[in-house]
Image (cartoon, rainbow, N blue to C red; front, side, top):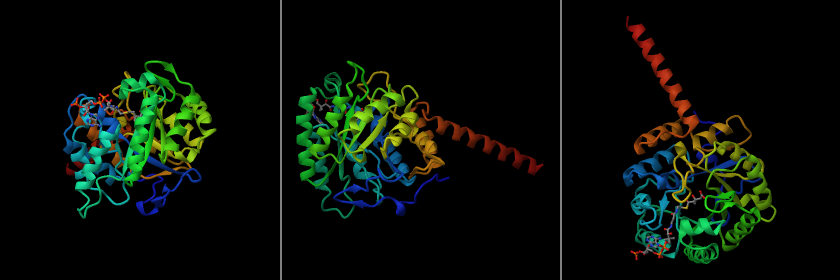
Length: 349
Ligand SMILES: CC(C)(COP(=O)([O-])OP(=O)([O-])OC[C@H]1O[C@@H](n2cnc3c(N)ncnc32)[C@H](O)[C@@H]1OP(=O)([O-])[O-])[C@@H](O)C(=O)NCCC(=O)NCCSC(=O)C[C@@](C)(O)CC(=O)[O-]
């Protein structure tokens, strides 16, 4: 079943200068699927690149058009993201689908650029045309996640953004811990507003506001967004909500009501940040799509296919599926199969 879903040919127009058509004036919701990166980076069990490739291909074939494929971070810091080169060079690269990767520093970007240059003579599409940089709204989280203060991370990130833009890559920005920091507590939303502006001024086409710990609720998310939107264009913002307290979908709807039209989510609710103790995965893609069903909002992605992928990848990584919708659809499918089986048995008698 495809819910309020536009076929790929009806997706918003992409232009090199402006990126995906700003959706703030429309009801089209861009889903940024972060499961293969944010989702898998925290798993204990080693996940072979072949599984990640299969996951990304399945997600693209289920109609998702922005799929974060991996990270060029230090494998000492995030061992699960080793193998990203294999992943981005071997996925199917469907037309109209973007496969961004996370890059923390110039070293990571240079590693990516050498992969891109090796591929420049190939007739196949480039492994990626987009990177994501990331900073945090508190020094404590910045130190834990990237071993530097906010000021140092701005300098580091600025270098990455400049070089990436010079090389023709699109750059997305992440700002972590926009509501609360697991190390230093509540966050001043004016800091979130100012750091968002810094990322946009550097040249990020969009800034994803991360409730990394997942403690936000519609009230705090709304307050934070009002502050951020006071000086930043809502069309350049995305919502990235971890579902630790079960507020993910409510926070998504709050962000949409505030005018945000890009939502990060992960299939099966995979994930969590290794430097955010206790935080669970992102709001599940299935849960977001289900919440939009029958609403004025549209999004691309086949709910049933994505729910099946959520069950499959949860089994692959040996964890419980965190998507309530995914589990409900799976249970319904089992009931229907059971019923059919009984009817077949009856017919044979
Ligand atoms: C930023 C660093 C590298 C600093 O880490 P550092 O230890 O300060 O780096 P360094 O420059 O001193 O280098 C140390 C070693 O790492 C190597 N190195 C250095 N850079 C790279 C690289 N790019 N790729 C591969 N190797 C690298 C470097 O070559 C050296 O190797 P050695 O000489 O010891 O053999 C490290 O802290 C790091 O990789 N952090 C990444 C942490 C991370 O990925 N966190 C998760 C993603 S963020 C997130 O999940 C939040 C988000 C985005 O989803 C939004 C939200 O929910 O809030």
